[in-house]
Each structure stands twice: as structure tokens, then as C-alpha cells.
Length: 184
Figure 1 (cartoon, rainbow, N blue to C red):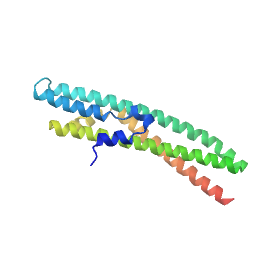
Figure 2 (spheres, rainbow, N blue to C red):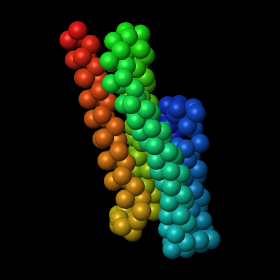
Figure 3 (cartoon, rainbow, N blue to C red):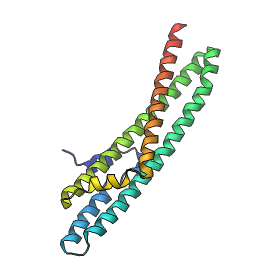
Figure 4 (cartoon, helix red, strand yellow):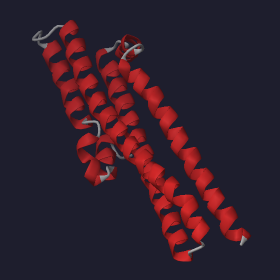
């Protein structure tokens, strides 16, 4: 079985590499905390606070990138929507093909973004599990509970709403194209 850190590194979208969770750094930090606690160089409170700060920073990086990408996808869809009816009225086969390919490009980029989210969510879940297992307490519950009313949870709701809108719009447009192109 391939270790998650290696899988994450191998499956990253290269141009987005700097926006993924830094799983390797977080894993090293967990090991360092364990060593420091063993020799009495740090106390549990410091470790919890420092690790929380690091997680917050990683999540913020991911969410800000995600929102930027969503905005770009939404703008591309909006531009395509404006061209849609005009091009269909012209009945220009090459323009219709270009528009259809542009919609497919948005769909492809949406799938890449969803994969990005999945990999980061898995990394976050795994590092929290590793932290809990290493230190024998339920940091995951503490972390999630203390962030429940935090802006990140609101951003997660925004993300769900925007992604579902983009997916449904892409499906609608593709089915509309299919219907109109085959009707003629």
C-alpha cells in the first residue's frame, strides 16, 4: 500500500502544487511534537495550540485558492452562457463545436478542482487521525468543535453551493446542446 504522502505528491496537479495541504510538513511536526513531549521540552497545551495554528494556515491556503478557482470557473461559464444563444442562432457548426468544447473544458477543470478538494480533505483527515493516534487524545473532535462557527465552515457551505451550481449548469448546458444539435 502506498503511503498517503507519496500518493499526494504523485497525484498533484503540478500548476496547483503550492496550494495543496503540506502533509509532509504536518507529519514531521507531529513527530517532532512527540519527541518534545517525551523529553519534556514542550507541554500539551503548546502542542495543541501550535498544531491548530498550522492546520488553520493550511486550510486557509486551500480555501482561498479554491475560491479563486471557483470564481474563474464561474466567469468562464458566464461568458459561455452569453455566447450560447447567439451561436445557436447562427447555426454555425464550427462555432457550436468550439462552444461545446469550451463547456467541456470547464467541466474538466471542475473535475480537477473536485479532485483537488478530495485530496486535501483526505490529507487533513489523515493528519488529524495520525495526531490523535500518536498522542492518545481526541484532537480531531476538539479542532472541529472549536471551528464550527469559524468562517471556514461558512466557506465550506459557499463551496458546496457554488460547486453544485456549476455542476448542474454544466449538465444543463450539455443536455441542451445535445437536444438542440440532434433536433436539427
